[in-house]
Amino acid sequence: MKFSALALALAAMSAGVNGFAVNNRAASFAVRNVALKSAAVDVDTKAALAQAANEARGIAMDSIAAAHSGHMGLPLGCAEIGATLYGGQMQYNAQDPTWMNRDRFILSAGHGSMFIYSWLNLAGYDLPMDEVKNFRQHHSMTPGHPEFPNSEHSTPGIECTTGPLGQGVANAVGFAVSEKMAAARYNTDDHTIFNHHIFALAGDGCFQEGVTAEAAAFAAHEKLDNLIIMYDANEVTLDKMAEYTQSEDILKRYEAYGWEVFDIDGHDLDAVDAAITAAKASSNGKPKFIKCNTVIGKGMEETEGTNAAHGEAGVPYVDNAKKNIGLPVDEKWYVSEGTRDYFKGVQAKNTEVYDDWQKTYAAWAEANPDMATQLTNAIEDNVPS
Image 1 (cartoon, helix red, strand yellow):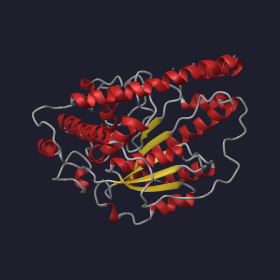
Image 2 (cartoon, rainbow, N blue to C red; image 1 turned 45 degrees about the vertical axis):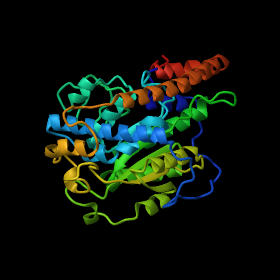
Image 3 (cartoon, helix red, strand yellow; image 1 turned 45 degrees about the horizontal axis):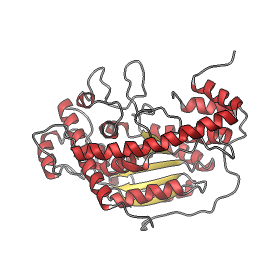
Image 4 (spheres, one colour; image 1 turned 90 degrees about the vertical axis):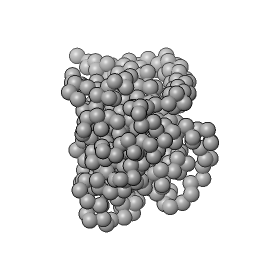
């Protein structure tokens, strides 16, 4: 189904939703530097996710090396985050990328676009490896920054165009508003058709921009607890280590806004999984901010952990990096059969959720024909004359 956040918001507003903030004051709490109590990722799944993370790193390195342009730091540094999101935590159907109740993922740090292209390919979206190989080439499906489908690029799984730092965080807040408004207008006591989450991955540069501060304050005030921001905290900015330009305690800042905060090792699959699980389960009226402490350019020993890892400075070291993380040096854009099989399993599980939702939606539409017509008109951009 074609569906936009704008359509959701307009449909809900036209129906007379009186706001979307929760009136009761939720109990305040935060999670910082603690071991989250959650079942660890099982051994087989953890091994599959770790392998997928390294293969995503390899895909990103090969594409950036082929283009002689791009940003390696984020795709390599956030690989475990991508594996956790696309490998189990996010609700999506790669065969129906505009399903209205999908979780949304927004790459606010849009310069790291090979992160999302790698994971869309592995997750089974219609983004062929030939297009991944065509990274940053004219008319390809993999432009330098993610672009919402348009006449020039049509890449399934891209929720919005990002690039200007901080913009994606504000976009994510807008998506969260849309979901809350749609849920308030269309969910009934008998049927829930909107209950998805909004994820955004952002870096230091995003949080240095004022737009994120304004959006964060708004999100907390409106109690958007369906919003989960993943902060790639790698202590590096474009030209210098972050300590030269910032010294704030960002977790205290977000606590002060009214967010629930988490502080984790962004390379620990158990920790990433546990934090996201806790964030999704917490309907306490607080948006969620997960500080993922990472090593920029992880896996490329010549540049990792330095500002040189941010861009394409690591291109000369790609072969050595691939060897160090256990990938075949002589095979570009390598994806193992095991990783493909793992994501086929993920797709099967996601399809079960999707099929169950379709049954719920059909029952809801039959029970609420007027609302169903209104929602269909919004989806199809039918404006009453």
